[in-house]
Image (cartoon, rainbow, N blue to C red; front, top):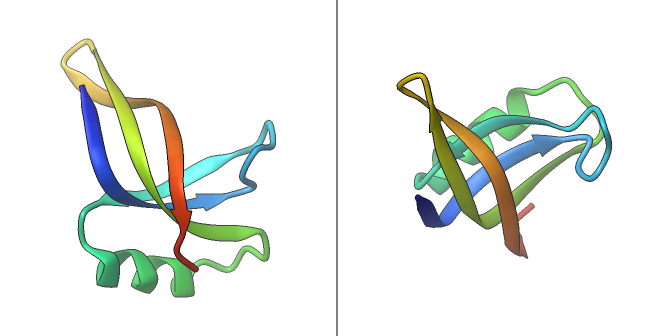
Length: 70
């Protein structure tokens, strides 16, 4: 399943330690989470997010950045 035009907040983008703190449609909520994070290497992207279901739970398999929103 692909979720198009989602906002994602990512720490350590393109590194092995990459972590995603928000994945959703609400840009204001994404900015709020971005500002609350205490990490220096944080980014907000608009992206197409590919999800997969494992044991009944949705996981982010990959994402394709459409634009940098921060």
